[in-house]
Amino acid sequence: DAGVTQSPTHLIKTRGQHVTLRCSPISGHKSVSWYQQVLGQGPQFIFQYYEKEERGRGNFPDRFSARQFPNYSSELNVNALLLGDSALYLCASSFRGAGGANVLTFGAGSRLTVL
Amino acid sequence: QQQVKQSPQSLIVQKGGISIINCAYENTAFDYFPWYQQFPGKGPALLIAIRPDVSEKKEGRFTISFNKSAKQFSLHIMDSQPGDSATYFCAGGTSGTYKYIFGTGTRLKVLA
Image (cartoon, rainbow over all chains, first blue to last red; front, top):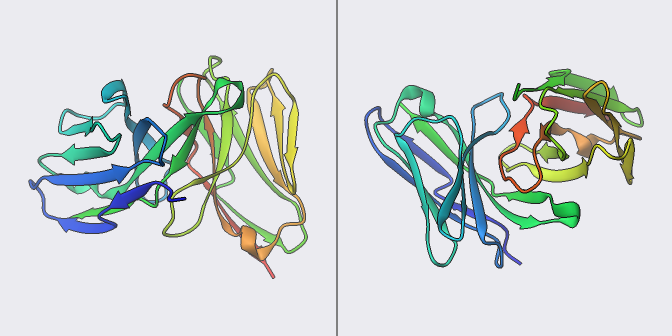
């Protein structure tokens, strides 16, 4: 059974450019969340989508946007890239576990380097 | 109010020893506390999780201890093995949401 798949795995961009990252959730999972993990830090919540609707947004500027498609895959878009956007971008799909908690399963991430 | 503080930043343990990682949270609305294990080049993987209505949860060599009054919880890895060498993250969140607040991580190295 395939896990959460993300593409591309690595990419290099220059300041001011735009980037699109893609995520396919585990089959049957309808929710996708995006997290940013800066080197040496824990993941930080960016967005959550459920059934194609945005259900949560973290403290990130409007340069960050996302969407979810009818097949539950998702894209994260970042415009006007800054050096500080260099990070590992993690996608997680979710199911409701025992007791009602939303259990996150992460992909391997897309490592973005902004020069 | 949203922070989860994690310590130590790094930890070196001999094979067979006990690894202990501590976390403290601020938001009393949190009711779900997972621990994630991350190997280089991989995404975080759920290791074990606890709710504040229990004081301890054990799964194999991994145990979470939870102190609700102190707003602290810890991960104990018994009989630590070199294969446990990874970065460990604690997190806190509220049931029904997908927004988890992660600690800054502990890099564990288990010496053979």
